[in-house]
Image (cartoon, rainbow, N blue to C red; front, top):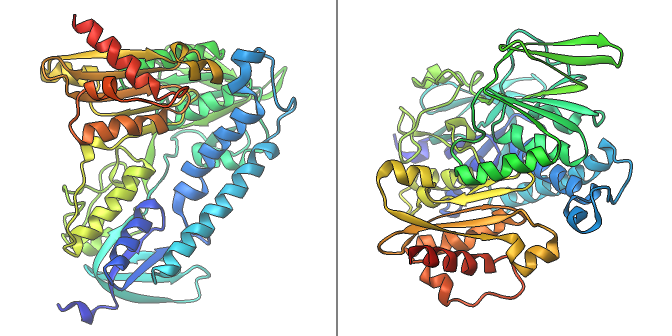
Length: 469
């Protein structure tokens, strides 16, 4: 069917990072684009209850708790002695409002039509819109459709999330007080991030996960360093443990959450955060109308171009699963729109960086030592510790480290893995060298500003070369 017989060239369902980027990319090549968002505000989970609120909350905690200065001024140092949720959320609300305004402005200036409505597929090329006040509905059509609906926190079976004692990660921005103790069920990225954020506030945190290691896709040395830092913050790690039951029980301390583990152990805390993955927000999309199906977690399968089983329908962002990062979601949205409208483009998914905003933060690009070992790739590593770098001393970060992995024979850089202050910024230097297929000799010959954390690259490169000899 000719494109001009449709109402739009592209309809994007969802206004999060993936949907925004898909819409704007299509608009840049003069396509008629509409973005449908069911919430009263735009930006999706990322801006409203996910990435932006959690990272802003983290920054507020880092500042008010005095965490960054503790190595210099002692463990008791704080910027504010009595920190409340109101103190933390004040900063969150300011940043969220700003991001919503920026997003709306970007869509407006690119002539993307924004429609506030519930959306479902009404056919292969049709989308049924139901007004948010339920006053009516209409059907619109497009040559291409992008599903960027994101995810929601997976609901538990067998017990109630009451928003008073037991929370999902999406509920954290609405938490009414800071607990004295918190049990976190689930040691994935979100669980680890919130566990360390609350631990930095002085909350006694118990982290429970059925796996023997946290975040198995991250380099083991980096995770060992994170686990050590968690325990230094008085966190209790219950790894290899499964939750059998959670209930709110009355005891001498009032109402508390009691968690019974399969092993027979019991964990008691003021509050519990249930963070066992996320589920694709696809249940209300009427996917059957276009012949689409999801997996057991509501996620859609796609090919290398982000096309679903219906080639003119694309899916991008968290709804397609790992890695579920805002940065990768944006790129997926851009690539999907480029493919739909035959725009020349190039992307290298294996060079996408990962940022995990635990305290301390983690970032990585390229394969881990474990992955290279499994593939039989000969490699050597070089490590720099922040405590060896003047900037690390100035910042008071004595535990951070940067690891370079390079080919044993060619010295070509293969991967960069960092834990410590500024890791998610610092990783981009290594990402650029990887993209140009450079060797660690680049870091030896390059001059870095002094004092900076970037000097870690030169120190790690020298360490690696010394290990060769």
